Length: 467
Image (tube, rainbow, N blue to C red; front, side):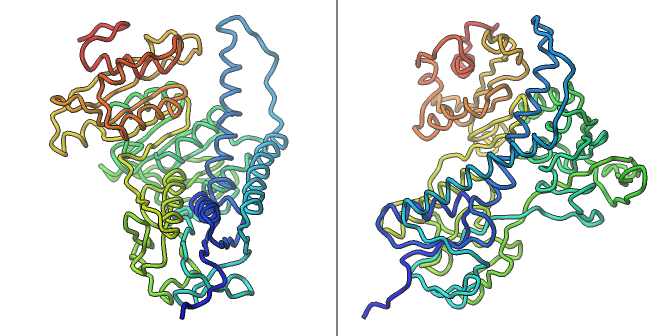
């Protein structure tokens, strides 16, 4: 006799991975519930991807206005209504999270509110109620990692959540601890809004995972805008005083220590998977020492009917990775032949210029044994980039020498994240540089830079000298 459950699928967590999984499972005819202890949309919609992009956009409008006189447009004195800015940002978040709630209703997904905690491998307590499900998807996401010696108060010392609330006045001196995506995006926001910003990174290079040439070009652009960058530097401790936050900085190479004063300090040293209160062990689910719940390519944990998606499953902790994994888990549960088999997962730093990449870096390709050739097209040679007043950056293509197979694309420049779509599709389709070069791209566009980079692989780019 088949055991009866309250739901075919229970999804724990309503972030990008969770709500994608819930909606797809419902689309496939399954009875679905989604449990969320906070707000639907998860970190991404509420305190991550979306609100940061709103602030980035606002900051870029300020920067654009400053430079408009270069082509004959003069504006009056710039003034910021901080309360209105924060309200506008929060309004976007409210609209999008409300949209997820509406999608749940439209797809007949039951929304359960409360902390989810396993009772056994088919039973979960959500708030004050207990439900059962034939299959369970864990999509609990991640939270900011902490740094010893710096206690976050969400005012003068903040994590990525606190940094989203722009103070009035804007802090004159800002320290971003961590030279990754989060650190640089907030550095860019605060720099454009008038803060003097310093970014420190413990490792020898910022933005780990990106191509070395692209990082070099990116940091050059950030420094040009006035952002100070110090690598192999760590923050040991911070003390709040009347004149600001006194932070002890240490040179990792020499051990030399200095104290600098800031008005606001951002701790952006990464994120950690969120499993607190889940009681996964009661379901027999394996959790690693680092807090991850490993999954196979079909998103199954060590317990076959319990699936894991998103940040809690593995790095990279990216919303678009979680979305894809959520769809895979739902489709596998519904009996579809789904699997997470992406050739590459794109990465983006949404500053201006943006830094975006997909596929192998040049060094990764060489380390894997490929004999490679590259093609680079500078945006200083792009007519469209000139009309946008954004000529910092380039498109770099990494290709296998003998087969011309595309291995990776790395872009520094305006709308780099949008240009990455073509590159990602090309990688998934096993395209060659010649395939891209033979494709007619609209003129004048930034997309032509991808074409010219492909032509540069073969020393045939039209608008640059082919060395």
